[in-house]
Amino acid sequence: MNLKEKYELVCQVLSCQGLRAVAIVVGINFGQLYQWVHKYKTLGYNGLINKP
Image (cartoon, rainbow, N blue to C red; front, side, top):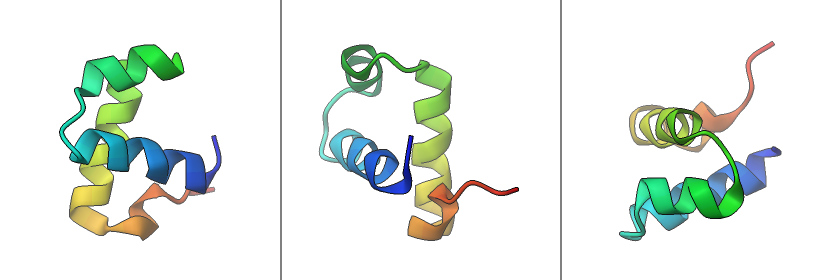
């Protein structure tokens, strides 16, 4: 997933949609989405950037 897609999913979760529900609809692992939300909360938008 690209950065914009990750950000959109994180925004859906933060706007009170369920974490599991968003993960199921998109077809990604719940744990992965949880990590993205956690990184966004701690590091902001730059936390979603893939590190080499």
